[in-house]
Image 1 (cartoon, one colour):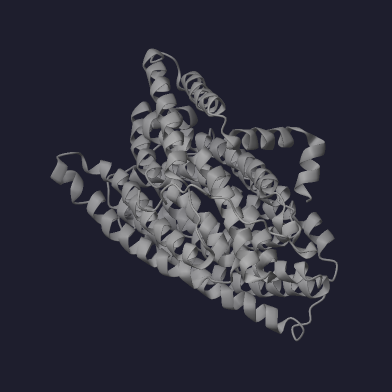
Image 2: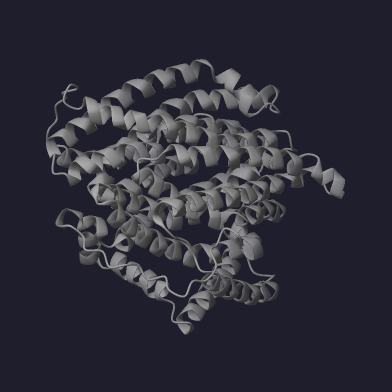
Length: 557
């Protein structure tokens, strides 16, 4: 592939004599990534349980379409101003102040950003509630009648909860800058538990439409709980609880100077997801729900293996930003190349599983009650399409973090615009005109949305890598390393597929556990046979998470 550099005989980095104040910046990112991954894993497991129960009661129904589409709209706030955006604009400035030892100004900056964010989000929530009917016409133009009215009702309930989730990102930014990762990344468990409670209590007692309203209120309660679990640790770190806008004027300007292009970039990126939702609303009933079921599964490896590495590296990269240019480039190269190998080791088998064993994954999580085997196969098509661009999406997160650490938010924005334009054009062609041309049912156009997004993701990744390499030197993955990973993953998936054929009479849960554990075991055994260092890194992270003393120590480093 053109975006992966050819093999080089010598990839060794020059030895970097780190300054004392950069010691923490050159520490073990793997340990922090493992802490984040552990937190994300817990929240993702809770999310999968939530959606499994949701699928049991609502399946691929019109109500499920309404809720999934409605959930997207207030998420505009969270996507534009939430976790990734605030981290990219706030952490580099805040982390630099901490790295310089100016804790008092850093505390004031944190409170200042929090105050401005609270005011801005409150205004936007109020506006969002008022203009909800117009937003429905934009996001889901294919919805009519009762389906449209239900979606409006759901969105108006969800908007305040989305505002609370944006504020939760402020807590995460503060905690991450102090290398406190676990609490902030497990906090979404509280949000998921509130929705799970609503589903279990109201599911047997209400109609499908009534249940959708109940879990919307459960989401708002869960958003408040997500903030509450982060408050104690955050307040213990921000001891200078006063504001002096004159003193923090310069760093505050820097935060919001960075924020604007990041918000635009996230808006552009999320535009593609919302357009996918628009196009899916024009397809037969069930397409919107299927797209969202598939995207939840797709986000698991992105969050666990892509975002966890990128989020753990951003504070350290930001603290290294004050080093001499050659030293900083060497640190960034070393962190990027190590992080890329770590990501690929776990994402390549995830992609192979989506493509070859996707029906097993979907059935194990969702198949129950109103969610049938036919629904599982339908969502598999969405998941297989997502597998095309999974590796590009996860590695691209790490490259974005490197640009943000260099205080460059505009380069990722330009490339995101190109990706979105490609996604829009290819998505439309693959979702609407292509299925009739191929003589297949129109509903399968939903898979074309994820395939086209994956292809555009590879283009964006190639541009990010090319631009960064021009600034700091070579980064990337050797083709020989990728070839080994794909050979292991496809070989293990082929054997697991044979097992799937022999277990056709078993239930989806038993079948899924047996097949996927066999697949994972074969892949890891192959990596052990090839003596891949990433396997030891992976097992060491698990060992640290299972050891309370080690986990406590690593999370505080």
